[in-house]
Image (cartoon, rainbow, N blue to C red; front, side, top):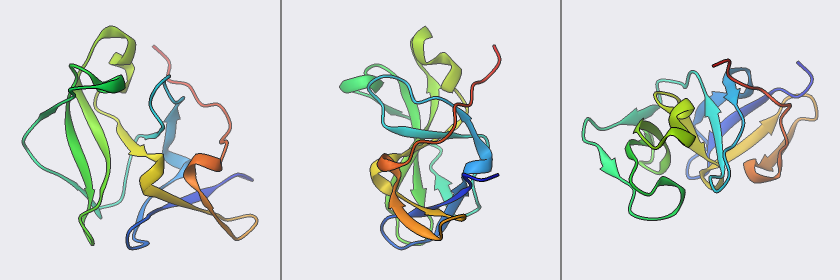
Length: 123
C-alpha cells in the first residue's frame, strides 16, 4: 500500500510494528495508533494499571514497553466504559512515543503528524 509505514520506538529506534496492522480510528482524547499485531520487541507486564485521569480514567490496562530501552510505548486495554470497549485487547501505541518511517517517501516523521487512511473495526 502507498501509505505504508514502519513504527519505531522514539527512544532507541527499535521496530515495534507497521501500518499494515492498523485496525481502528483514534478515539477522542487519546493520541494513539491502534494495531492488531506488534513485533516481539513490544513487552507488557502481567499486572494491570488503572487510569486515574484523562481519557483512560477508570480503565484497567497493561502498559506496553519497548524491550530494548524500556520506554512506555502504549497500552492494551483490559476493561473500560462502553465508549472505549472496541479497543479492548488491541495494541494502542502512544503517538508521542512512536516515530514513523514512511516507505514510499523514505521519510522519518512524528506519528502525530501522519494521517493514515481510515480503518474501522466491524462490530
